[in-house]
Image (cartoon, rainbow, N blue to C red; front, side, top):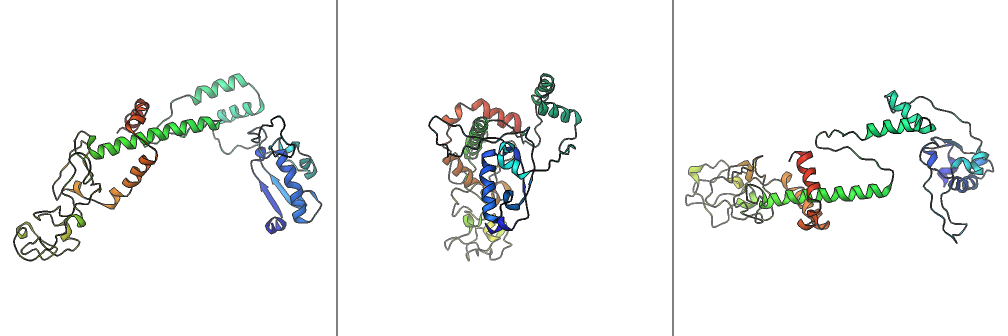
Length: 314
């Protein structure tokens, strides 16, 4: 409250969205807070906007609605407070946002209600053209109604969930490689992974001369002292039983572009890293939360298949 009382000027943008009802209620509040009977309590209001654009979002008045209910009705300039504020009008004529003068002319025609059939025909023809997809990112679609926004977002989210479900299915063995890439889950899961917790030997496992981080194949499987569990020896590639403690649920780095997978101990495809696993639990949680199933995706099959294959090239 003190902040409003001490202000010298207040800038209000998008004035077309401010209703007459709102302005009429705010103006006396400013007078009371600032302790002055001048309009808005002597506060200088700088109001910017275009009344040829969107009007205030008003609520409908039903029969029997109380006269005291705030409905956000009317344009700001229709309020008695607007006239009392006695604004000085400044018309801005230079367009900065658009560089295409033909487009600027079309917008001006629509704004002033001139040449409407020609302007609408041109805009419709230009706006219905296919939009380029760059880097797999589709252009944002604008709607004039919230219902259209909600319907589109719901459909696209369902498509995205089905796409994620298909990718998780691939990780669990539904791909052409017919094997899972998640330890302990799915079809033919990995049993040899490069991860310290998975391969550090216990007291029962020994390796003769492998007492340093630079163990070699000749050092493996020779009775003797236990292999020390250091960071590098945790990746010891020639231990006789490298999967001593499988990290169940971990996602390995996975196959190549053609689903080729090298399951050997030294393959980079059997690594378990934080980078590969950071998002995996979140994806699973998201699919669970959205109740995405094969049956829920059946109705969107053609849609999400076109989304995944046609646009992203997966």
